[in-house]
Image (tube, rainbow, N blue to C red; front, side, top):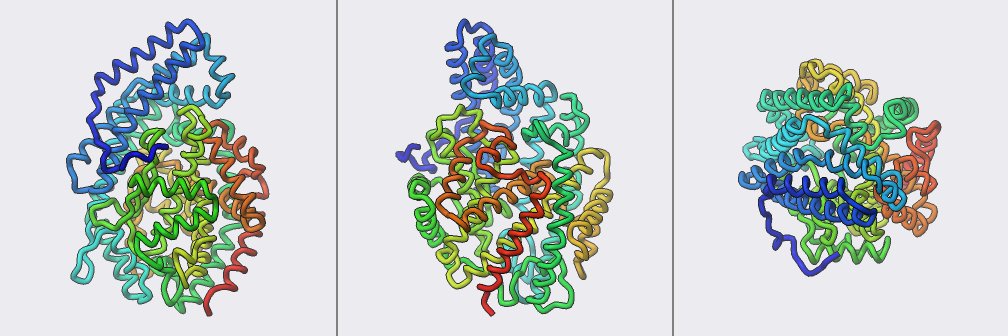
Length: 569
C-alpha cells in the first residue's frame, strides 16, 4: 500500500451517474461480445477499476459526513452517492458475465465462490433499484439524526458519546439520571424515529417482494452469503445459547450485583462492572496510538509496520468530537492501493480501546487479502466471517492491556470477556426480534416493543429497568438501536464471529505465535471461501454445530476463573 499521501489531501468529486451508467453499459456490452477468455478477464479488470472509483467517492463523502454531522454539504453528498451507486445496473453486468461462454475459465481461476457472488448481485437487484436507493437514503438519515441528538443533563448539554462516562458513574443516582436523560432525549424524538423505522420496514419489504423473496429476512440471508446454511442452523445456534450461555451470564450478573453492593441489578447498573469504576484508559488518543504500535509489533512485526503506515497517512481519526457520530466506530476501504480508514469517537472509557482495536482487525484483514492478490470481489469476507478478524483482535488486545490501561489492565480483561459473552446472547435476542420485524412489516412500534420485552426475559431472566422501566416498556431504547435501523439481519454475524474469536483466543492462550499465524491465514483468504469452508480451512468448528456452545462455555468458565483471581481485592 502507498505511503506517499495523507488522507486530508484526498479530494471528493461528485460522481456523474449518467456517465457511470453509460460506462457500465459499455462494459456489459463488451462482455457479451468478448471473443476470448483473455478479453473477458480484461473487461473484469476494467469493471473492478470502475467499481473502485464509484466506491471511493461514496466512501469519502461518508467519512466526511461522519466526521462532522453538521456539515450539510457532505450529508447531501453521501446521500447522493449512496442513492446513485445503488441504482447502477450491476445485476445486468453480472448476468452478462455469468452467461459468457468463457465464464468457466473464470471459475477455474477464482473458484466457485466467484459465481455465487455474481449470482447474488443478480438475485438481489433484478428489480426495485429505486427502493434500494431509498433505503440507503433512510439509513443515512437515521445516522444523521442519531448524531445530532443532544442530551440536557444537570445544566450541561451532551452528545450521546459524551454522556457515556456519566452513565458509567460509580454513583448510582448519576447512572440512573444520566440514563434517564438519554432515554428522555430519544423519547422527545420518538415520533420522528418511529416514522423513519416504519418507512424502512415498508421499503425493505418492497425490495424483498420486488426480487421474488418472501420477506426481507430471506433477502438478507442471500445478501449475507448464507448459501449452504440458513435459518435452521442459526435457530440451533440460538437454542444452544439459551441452553448453555444464558445460565452462565445469569451467574455473571449475580456476581456483578454483589460487586456493586446493590439489592437488585437494574439495566442502568449493568454498564458498571466494578464498584470503584470501570477500567479507564491510561492516557489520551496519542497514548492509545503509541500503545497500539507496541502491541501490534509484539503480535506480528508486519502488523506493526502496517499500523505505522496508517499513522503516517492519517488513515484513522479517533479524537473526541461532539460533531462526530456517537456510539459507533467503523473501518471502510478507499482504494486497493490506499490504507483503509478507521473512525471512532473516543469518550475516555474502555470502549475507546475496544472499538479502535476492533476496527484495526478489519483493516488488517483487508490488507492481507489485498496482498494475497485476490480479485476485488473477494476483498470482503463472507458476512458471517467478516467480524472474526475484528472480534479476535479485541481479544488479542489482552496481551497489551497494560499499555492501554496500566493498573486497570486486569479489570479490562475480565469486563471485556464478560461483555463479549453477554453480546452473543444479546445479538441472538436481536436476531429473533429482527425476524419478527422483517416478517411483520405492518407491525406497530408498540408490537415491536412488546416482542422485545418478552425476548429480553428469555435471554436475560429478571432484567428490569427499575424506576426507568416505563421507558423500556415503551421501547424507547430501541430507537438507539443502529442494528435495527441500519443493518438488519447482520447482527447474527457478530454473534457467530464472537464465538469464533473465542476459539482463536483459546488457541492463543496455548500458543500465541501459532494462533496469530492461523488468524492471518484466515484473513488472507478474504471472500474466496464460503463460511463453513473458511472455518474448516483453519480447523475451526462452526458455532451452530452441535456441542460448540457447550465447549465454549467450558472454556469460558475456566477463563473467567483465571481472570477473577487477578482482579484487585
